Length: 121
Image (cartoon, rainbow, N blue to C red; front, side, top):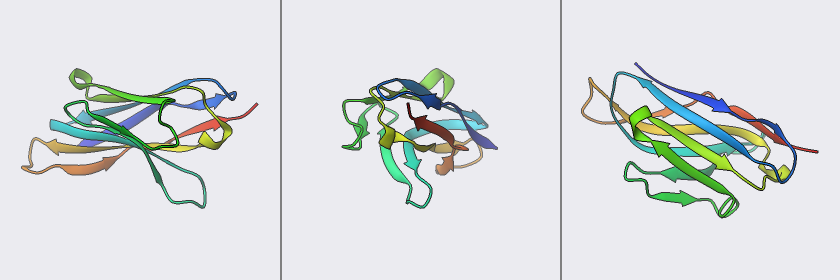
């Protein structure tokens, strides 16, 4: 069984910084692309960033230059470092990962539990 567990988030003032973590655990054979999404109630979940197994990255235009995603492959963990936060960044943030477990020959898609980020003075 594979799980994605998120940590971090909370309340921050505009212009502040936060870091989110997303740790994969369980019977893991390989972790491929790890992604971040966010969702405001009533809206669709939107793409924020991803990092491949080879550490190539891509960002949504709305966060480019302010957010950085990284990963520690030894810990099967991805990070989202968010700088210069704006009120419009307020949302529930979700991590997503393509993971192949030790019983499978193909990867499956997993989601973290979500974590609230609130940017407000």
